[in-house]
Amino acid sequence: MNTERTEVGIIGGSGLYEIEGFTERRELKVETPFGSPSDAFILGTLEGREVAFLARHGRGHRILPHELPFQANLWAMKSLGVERILSVSAVGSLKEQYAPLEIVIPDQFVDRTLARKSTFFGHGLVAHVGFAHPFCGPLSTAAAEACTEVGAKHHKGGAYVCIEGPHFSTLAESQLFRSWGMDVIGMTNLQEAKLAREAEICYVTLAMVTDYDCWHPEHDAVSVDQIIDNLGKNALTAKSVLRATLRRLPKTRECECARALRHALFTAPELVPEETKRMLQPIIGRYMPAGAP
Image (cartoon, rainbow, N blue to C red; front, side, top):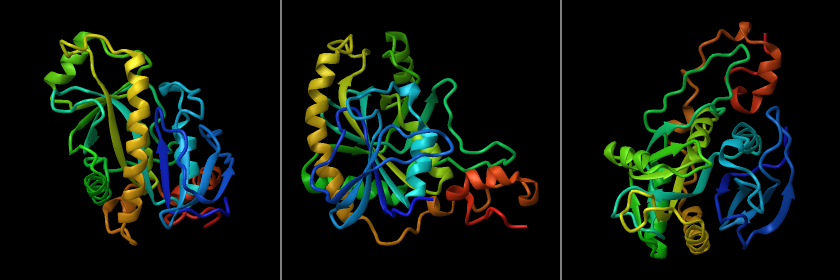
């Protein structure tokens, strides 16, 4: 178990690989039962909070969306004591009113991924966690208020459709997602949100719009050059919003995220293999301590 203790995790997406301004800055490599996380964590104090920052794709952007070690990333966050995660993600817009360089704070997901690891459970332990409302309400409100504080144009609420990638959508797919009422499209956040809920960590996404998806008649192909240019601009905005959000976080958590496993563990403790209990101690320790009879 890690001796480092942090309060808040920040997961930086495309274009956001580090945040300046940490005091007592240090790096920490964490090994987990699920392998190595995407990169070393940057730990330190930011806006009076103990923060663990992780570059989702690794510094230098080395990891494809479907290759991301989601379980390792979230297990490591939990082992560090993280209770809230602020995620930053590049997305395409599926609606005219969500323009590039604006922020969407979604409140729903639709899963169009294929075979990604989305749970810590199995290995003799069955759990079914409620996921009707996949983002933390109070954390989303804090993020929206932070956007207002720093003058970032944003939209609170909306559905994020998560696709497998690494390819962008076909025109038919983009039009289909629009017909479903989806708001933004991305490749990374769904698994993070599911695993965060299992780990009883509050989770919110700052979905940073880089482009209109290919449905738009004036943007019928997603340009990597355009995206890279907007990523840099979005990263500057995201840093300001993240710092303002940290200042707004309440001291205690009253949301259901903090108790997500309370009625979710189905397997009788005496039937769960001890190895599974040890592997998942950061996740289930308060309900099913290792070594307990």
